[in-house]
Every structure is written in structure tokens, then in C-alpha cells.
Amino acid sequence: MAGRIRLWSSYVLFFYVVTHLLNHALGLISLRVLEAGRIWFVFIWQNPVGQAVLYGALLTHFCLALWSLYRRRTLQLSRWEWSQWILGVLIVPLGTIHVVGTRIAHELYNVESGYPWVLGSLVASDWTSTARQFSLPLVVWLHACIGLHFAWRLRPWYRPWLPVLYAFALLVPIAGVAGAAIALRDVAELAQQPGFLNELFARVHVPTAAQIATLYSIADALQFTALGLLVALLLARPARTLWERRAGVVHLSYGERRTASHATGLTVLEMSRIAGIPHASVCGGRGRCSTCRVRMGGDDRAKLPPASVEEQKVLSRVGAPDNVRLACQLRPPPGRYRVTPLLPASAGPVEAYRRQPQAHGGEHYVAILFADIRGFTSISEGKLPYDVVFLLNRYFRATGQAVEAAGGRLDKFIGDGVMAIFGLNTDPQTACRQALDAARRMALALDDLNEAMSGDLDLPLRIGIGLHAGPAIVGEMGYERAAQITAIGDTVNTASRLETLTKEFGAELVVSQELLDSAGVKLETAPRHDVEIRGRQGRLAVRALASASDLTAMS
Image 1: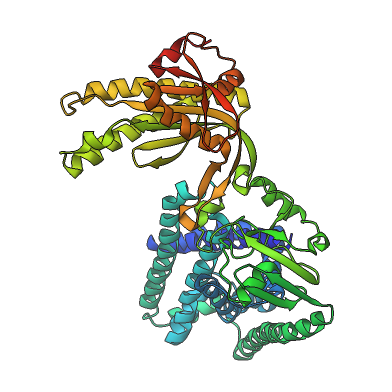
Image 2: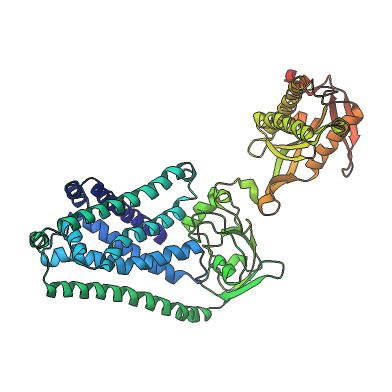
């Protein structure tokens, strides 16, 4: 909840900065337009409601930023996170002087805190004041853009809109700073006229030297207060760690002789980072993505606290089972736990998007298709490597389109072979009918391919297709970028064997009777065989079709 409130407070502050910079940009036209445009800015932000929202958001954001720093058990941050924190710290000294010199000066001494006062005071001061004033919007803007990038980059709409947002992030500060610079140049030129600055300062009720000293004292007090809060927070961190050690120690085992032991109060992600164990976390441990999720085991797993509402929302989105938790949100009590990260440490934003529930592993009733080109070795002999690659890619495209059009998932290409899965998100009957439809589409696509490449092939391509259905273990398997959802088990092995039997039967398709029964399809005219499958007990009834395109007449 604190993170969500902090995010919404940042939206308010960001909107304020955008309107402020757009007002600055009017200086590209003229000083008169610049000051006239400020009427709308004042209307939005300098009424009682606008001021309450703005300064409430500012105070909330500052306090919650300190709180988030206190809650962190480790300061091992990424370079982008360090950049955001450093920029945030710089805002305090730069921003307090600006706020005190404008709003507080207006409230205490009735100074007209518009552009004449600000630009005139910059002309009358040294270059350091000018550099400080022009640095403030850039520092604030970079700090905000980094934060919004981390907050938004997991949203599905973010990537399509990224070019527009990038242009916006470049043009707004450039236009704002350029407009303010041109306005400052114009005021500096007018200041060459005798008595111009005196008249300007009299019109805006410039504070006296004593009042200016008071304003600087207020700015110093605010800065020292912020610094004192930061120092107190940093000193409280080790004191908190010592106190928490009295409650017990958490022991985590990651396998491969990697362990971590720390006092209670830390999240699993924080313990991983302190122990130097690589761990994915695209959102930086804010609980907005699911890349840090882990499978929790061990004798003390029952002691784990239930997931919060926010954590459960993320876990439900990816279909995580009960033993999977977000490492950045889980603070285990004292005990011994076994931790298995479910994503590689190099996982990026793509892996953080919605993932299929099957990725965590489980048994599903699926239909499996295997297909292979007959005699491809002899076909490729004498051809240039380019021609072989071109031919295979045409074949893979044709078969892949056939599988996807039927509603299946193209699992992998193995040499000149293809494996496809049906039923990951459908019922068994639909899965089996989709597999038969895919086989039919593949046969028709092969006929079209042979016709299109008749001038390049001595003999037309022939394929063998094996189809079988049954329970299989489905889950995300592999390593790092090579991981993907696939299926293993007897059903997969059997479908592969049936594809091999197409050579023995001189058929294009061999399909198990079990799949046909599940699909509700009868192929009584197709020859039936009872075959033995290596590694499988008993005989399996199958049907052999000379051409898979004959499935057009299935009922």
C-alpha cells in the first residue's frame, strides 16, 4: 500500500513539473506570453485545493522515500536505482531554495513570486544561482523519468507507447529550459536600461536584506532537517538489525551448496542479494512484476506467512501454485527453507509479462504431433547450403502456420522434424480434433509447397506424421533464454514412435485409436494395426492413412 501511495504522489508531482516546464516553454515566444501563461499555472496550483494536493504529495513522497530506504535490508542497488536516489537527494538542496524564495517569500513578505521576480533576481545574482535554478528542473525530470520507467515498463501498453513517451521526455525539458533561458536573456538585455531592475523589484515587493537573510535561514533549516532525518534513518538501520537478530535466524538453501543465513525481517530477495546469489527482479523488489518468484520448500514451509493482497494479485496473474511466492515480498520467520528461483537471473521485462499457468509444471491431457521429412538426407545431397536452408525454412513456415491455424502450439524444430502440442488451454476432445486438423493442414500445405518448388526439387517432399494423446508433464523447461513451455512423458515418446512407424506402413499419418476416440472421430476405412511401442507395456491400436489430407471427410 505504501508503494502505491508513493507512486500516486509521484504522479501529482510529475504533473506539476510538466505544467511548470510547459509554462517555461512559453518563453520561446516572448516575456509577455510567458507571464500570461502563468495565469493558468496559478489557477491550477495556487488555490487552496491545488496547494494542499501539491504540498501533501511532496511531503508524502519524501516521507515514503525515507521509509522505503529504511525498510531495505541491503543497499546493493542497481546503477539506475542509485542514479534515482542520488538525483532525489540533490532535489532537496536545489528545491528548498527555490520554494523558499518563491512561495514562502510570498506568504511571509507578500513578494510577487512570478517570472519578473525570479528572472530579475537571477540577473542581479552570480552565475552559481543561475546554474542552481537551471539544474533543478533537469534533476527533477531525470529523477521522475527513471521512477516512471520502473513503474510502467511492465505494463502491456508501455512498449508500444515508448517512442512517444521518449519524445515527450526529451522535448518537454528541452523546451522548458530553452524558454527560461531565452526569457532570462531578454530580462538581462532590459536590465541594461538605467533603473529597470529597481522598478521591477519595487513592483514585485522585493524583500529587504534582513528578510532575505531570514529566507536563507529557513532554507538552511529545511535542508538540515532533511539531512538529520536521513542520518537518523541510516543509524537506525544497524540498530534494527541487532534487534531483529534476537528473534532468530532464517536459513535458506538454494541447492548447489549455496546457502544464506540472516536475521528475520529480510525478504528472500534481500537475503539472496546479500549472499551474492544472482536473482531476477525486474521491478527492483517493489512487488510489481513476477520475475523474482521462487518455489519454497523445506521442513518449515508451513511457517511461512500468507501472501498479502498485493502479492496474491501478482501470483494469481501468472497462475502460480501455493508453494510459489514473490521473493521480494516474502519475509520468512526463523527456520530452514529450500528456495528454487523459477526464472533466470538475467530475466528481463518480457519474462515479467503474463505467463501461462502451465509454466510451473503439472500434468495435462494433451495431443502431441510429430512430423518429419522422408529421405531429406538424399534430397539435400548435391544442394548448396543456401538452398538447403531456404528449403527447410519454407517447410517450417508452412508446417508452423498449419499448426497455429489449427490452434496448437509449435513446440520445437528438431533437424527437419517438428513437434507440436495441443490442449494447453482446451479440453481433451478439442485438443485431439485440433491435432487431426493440423495434420490435414500440413498435408495440404506440403502439396502447395511441392507445387511451388517443383522446378527446384527432383522429387516432391514427403512427410510422416505421428499423433497420440494422453497425460503428459507440461512445464517450462530449459536454461535461461533457452527455457520454454514443453511436454515430456510417455505420450510424447509414443507420438514420436508413431511418426517413425509411417515408414513401416508406407503411410503419411499414423494416429492412435485413443486420440481418435477422444476426438469423436471414426476412421473405419483406414487400416488398423496393433503395434508394440518400445518402452510401453501392451500393444497400441493405431490407424494408418496414406494421405493426411483424407481427414477432410472426418466426422
